[in-house]
Image (cartoon, rainbow, N blue to C red; front, side, top):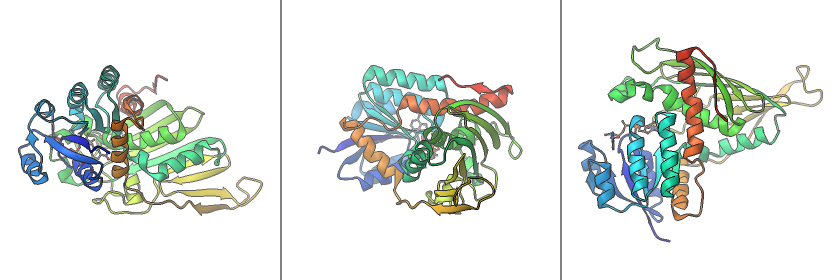
Length: 347
Ligand SMILES: NC(=O)c1ccc[n+]([C@@H]2O[C@H](COP(=O)([O-])OP(=O)(O)OC[C@H]3O[C@@H](n4cnc5c(N)ncnc54)[C@H](O)[C@@H]3O)[C@@H](O)[C@H]2O)c1
């Protein structure tokens, strides 16, 4: 099997997870170059034994890449993604695919025109918890799905906001964090039909929101509510539930609940709640049942999948069109909050 040659564009925080995955899959893939305008990344490239470029175009012109991993700030996803596709490389771009739906449409068009794939870095899709929850909800184990409630409430460290781009709306918790939950919700419950939301800036006076509250209508009739904030001290979020991020200690507390006519499911540490027999109503005890799952490193699974996509033996698990739908449902939160209107999404 020939080694897949990978370029990295944007060598900031999240790139570390991709670089670890590249190291773990050294028999399949190899890093061949890094592009990042920050001179500090030159030393990083040197320590990894690969050439450093300040410009993506210069990297693509000098070093042939089968695939390019784009980890730039969200507002700078579009240009390197298009440049990599034009250079004949397949792209793994961090989430969100882009900052706007119009930009995402440009990526879809260029992917089709060049015949090169775009895989979007929604790494939660590689967790067994997500696949199992989808099977439980869509397989009818809960009966008719009626309601969903979710929460992502953390407090990011103050120095997280040192780079100015993180104070702008493109880096707020809606586009940066809610997009993960929105993608899971779409994947598990079905398409989002409409979104109504409010946002607030009670802590900081920056452009980005500090909190959001939303109401979602799903295809199939279920209603969902979700609370989001990056300025709250609380144990309820995907990251704390699983302890998946080395910088965020685990709480083990679940963050989402899927409620059906016959049973309910807590997520992401899967707990099923069912009546102990007929009738299935409030006269009977509701008993808990843990669903056992194996642990998996999603960045390694994602990179292995990207290598398969590049080799032409798999289609992207979440391509540009799919990720654009997740983005549209997420951006709808900001649009609804701005206009005060419910946003109905194109199907
Ligand atoms: N999948 C996840 O869970 C996850 C987690 C964190 C971040 N992200 C995403 O990754 C992206 C980057 O986030 P981060 O926290 O690593 O940011 P960061 O600020 O830590 O790093 C960004 C890097 O990109 C470089 N850069 C800026 N403009 C560039 C350009 N035009 N070309 C090349 N490099 C450029 C910067 O110099 C910096 O080194 C964001 O889109 C974010 O949403 C995803």
